[in-house]
Amino acid sequence: MGTKMSEEKPQKLSRYAESRHKLIMESFNISRDDREQLYMPVALAHVYFPRRDVKLDPTESYIHKSGHFQLNISQLPVPNIHTGKNQFLGLPFGPKARLLLGVINALALQQGSNKIEIEADSLPKFLQKIGLTDGGNQISQARNQIARLSASLISVAYRDTDGSSVHGQMPIVKGFDLFPKTHPEQLLLWRRNIVLSLDYWDELQKHPLPLSMEHLKILSGNARAIDFYTWMAYRLHSLDKELFLSWATMKDIFGGDIGTMKNFKVKMRQTADLVKLAYSDAKFSFDGEGWRFRKSLAPIQKKILLP
Image 1: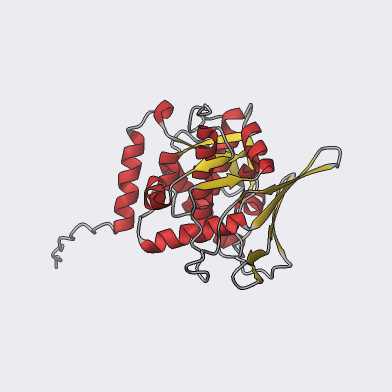
Image 2 (image 1 turned 120 degrees about the vertical axis):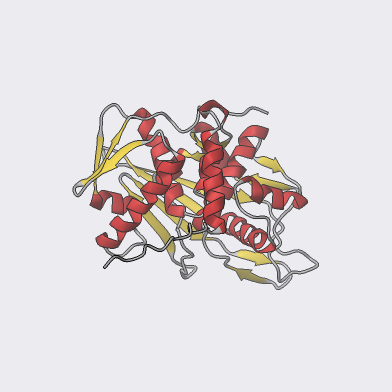
């Protein structure tokens, strides 16, 4: 006895999926040379901020190791002049911290100064520029992440082949009025300028890694995808031969927040699918043994914007 096939209506995409699809289509229509640039210092293409909010005691540091690199992030006490007490704001984390830092870096390089001019009322446009909505909650989260960036000490250590190590203390931003006089209990944190520390500014000028804003907008909801994309943007275009990394090595780099290898493999495959939608020129594959990467076009033409 035959069964009648029911006609299934096409499933409507979620608002988030629709926005990602639109961004992907827009990215395909922009040539590689015309993509808008964001920047990261090369050191942050090897080791990464936490992907989630890490609830650490102020005396503890966040540590991420990858190969010869080690990242330490420590919280700095922020004196509240209105209460007379120090406060600890927490560590920068998640996709917003990465995207905001990328835009701040680009503005600094474009303006040719570690003092970046930006008007307070432009924050909604600032968020929209990197693919985030301009709602009040997003603005609050963005302010919070920049507050955390301003109250953190970033230390990147590199172990050379001879066993020696080089440490770079990189407080990123400074010069904020964290506690407004009108509402001292609120972290309003947005003035007419952002000031990068001289150490960080020097590192950014010497070793800038260009990234595509169009690509990062596609990845804007996924910190792991941003990290994988940033790593490939640095590594793939300079490869002379195929690079093989075991699953264990990949987990050390991109999966420190995931407990089991089984779960990491699921998450990393999903991450790879998403990143491939943005960085379609990236040549990589994976199987049961590990991952293979081949020389690929960089996601964006390297050119520093001059003031």
